[in-house]
Amino acid sequence: MKKKQFLIILYLLSIHPVFSLELDNPEIDEFINYMHQQHGLEIDYVTSVLNAAEYQQSIIDAISSPAEFTWTWEKYRNLFIEGRRINNGKIFLNKHKAVFDRAESEYGVPKEVVAAILGVETRYGKIMGKYKVIDALATLGFYYPRRQKFFRSELEEFLLLVNENELALNEIKGSYAGAMGFGQFISSSYRNFAVDFDNDGRADLLNSPEDAIGSIANYLVKNGWVRGLPILWNIENNFLNQDDIGFNKVGTKLSRNTLRKHISETQNFLGNKFMLLEYEIDGVQNYYVGSENFISITTYNRSHFYAKVVQELATKLGYSDA
Ligand SMILES: [Ca+2]
Image 1 (spheres, rainbow, N blue to C red):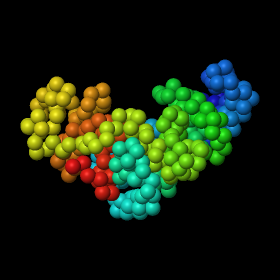
Image 2 (image 1 turned 30 degrees about the horizontal axis):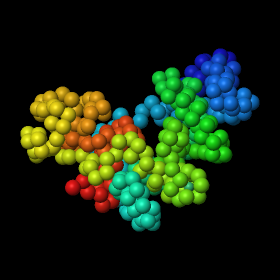
Image 3 (image 1 turned 90 degrees about the vertical axis):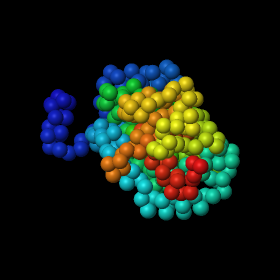
Image 4 (image 1 turned 60 degrees about the horizontal axis):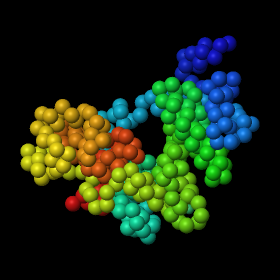
């Protein structure tokens, strides 16, 4: 039976197929050769790694409908801003207080912001993902054309990460998108931004909450976090008094109508020093200007829902923008 027909039948049966990658796929072959030529990994090694990887339909299904893009703000917010996550955040902050304080003073990122990211990503390390990272990256790198370039690059980074750090490749689990550990770093972020914050000689984001805390703070700083700057300003009441909120900093005066026109394209402001933001609660629009620190959080996850939820959870944990 041809693979396409096979896939269609499985789909019609509404089950979640899992099968080994087909190593005669020329793109996989090309990748194996690339890893050998570019990085000196043995052909046999890369082949055996990919041979053991499994295609998982549920990974494709999950990435096709991420909550950030299909949910309303209220639904998204309610998932994260709730009693248990807030209380556990306070407990986690208290348990690791010395480390959080050290990260805050070293990097200038408030401890509640780092804790909020940990809370949103993994409930402070409780849920770090059920998929084998190798399965996620191989599935998306070779069977998800829309973003295969990105995921193939992350697969490359993952193999390098595993080899550089002598990690047990087949034991590493993460999200459907291959994000790992306490802070759900993707492989390239792990290689670029992880720090050894408990000083045991290695940056271990899978097992060390201390390393995760330092690494998240380092990530934000390397991606534009400014010490002491608020994350966002509420502009509901003083919007017309634009000078107070710094629109002029980028030489632009915006009317409310202009703002309305732009709020659906907030990502376009990533190249500037602020983002204009709108969130609807109970049918009422709330407007904000996100600072460079807000933008820094969006580099962790490009959704402005995500960044706002981090800011709100941090506030519940004791952070203040004032
Ligand atoms: Ca360490």
